[in-house]
Structure formats: C-alpha cells, structure tokens
Image 1 (tube, rainbow, N blue to C red):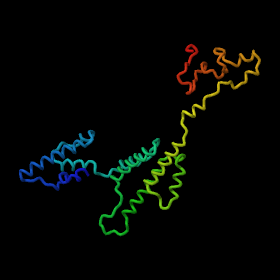
Image 2: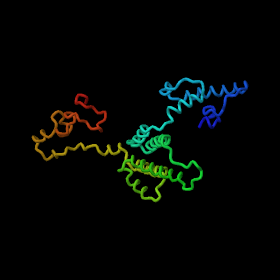
Image 3: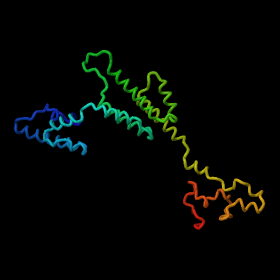
Image 4: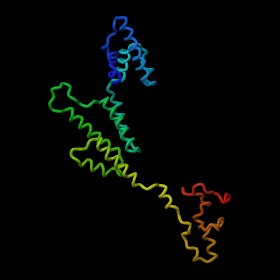
Length: 248
C-alpha cells in the first residue's frame, strides 16, 4: 500500500521497465535502489537471513512472495486457536481479536464476485456471515458471569447487531461495572477485627481470666487463640507494625 500510494509498486511487479536513456536510467536506479533498501529494512531480522541479497526489487519481491504468499493450514489452525483469549480487559481483548481476524483474512479471504455480472449479492452476504461469526467468537471469550446478560440481549435482536455495535455495548457495561464496584481499600478498612475478645472475660473469675489471655502479652487484652505473635499469622491489614514483642 505504501508503494502504491507513491506510484512505486511498478518497480516490484515489473511493470516499470528499466529505461535505456541514460538520464532516465540514472533516475530509475536511484529510486530502484532506494526501494530495495527500504524493503530489506522492513523485513524482520529473523526472516532476513532466509532472503538472498539481490539488487533487483522485482526478484526480491518475488522471493518473498514465494515464501509467504501460500495457504498454510497449520498457520490458520494456530490463529483460530489463539482466538480463545482470557484474562484481559474488554479493550485489549477486542484489539487482540481484531489482529487475529486480520491475519486470518490474509489466509482465508472472504468470498466475493470477481466476474462483475453476479446479481445474487454473494459478496455482502459473505461479509455479513463473517461478521456474525466474529460476533459469536467475541462473546465466547468473555466472562459469562459478567457479560452473560449482555450476550443474551444482543443475541435476541433480529437481525444480529454488528460486531462494532456489540463491542460498544460490552465496553459500556464494563465501565458501568467498574464505577459501581467499591474500592478494595474501603472494604479492607471495614474488615479490621474488633479488639474486644470473643469471650466476655468480665464474667469470669480472676483465676479463670489468666487462662483466657496470652501469658506473654497479657496486658494487650487478647485471647491465647488469637495471639498473632505466637501464631506468626499476621493479617494483611497489620501493615508495617512490629511483628515480635522485642520490637515493642
């Protein structure tokens, strides 16, 4: 596309022939050499070693085409396997799916009329079926517990919504859920246990109280079974407080 936008694709497909006039030849070689270098710079380093170093843009392009412009069933299967994506937010998930779908189009182009005489609208029908298939794949990768209701609502529509429309609806649902979800720090703040013992020691005799409280830190007012210093099981809300009696 970049070459065509600059009217330079004829150098790689051979339609722009090498001129015989010296003035035109000098200009042709300047542009041609630039294209060869540009193509080689754009090739991934891991692939560059598999391409012979040639000074002819058409030959270089033909060699790349022979290596990569083939129908690879293994590649198609690998791409379709990657459609099962988990653990992403909706925006990242949709972007990843779009990348895989674009790669699949390269290997499996949609059906389209090429004769120009077809009146059955096979091209639009094929594109609509492809969009519906991607719509199902998109919802298959979403968490059913979070987006199950949205999925049911979208699939009840007739005709089915476009993929971009369904994506916008799911994105709005995600934003609404984030706005209504309480902050974790606030939840933890209310989860701090009370310092009062679970057993009402005030009803116990003085001799019985001694058995209820921790002997190593009796003045701190907690039961033996809840002594953090003995169990060394400090909760997340303990923070940077000392974790041994010697530090107090």
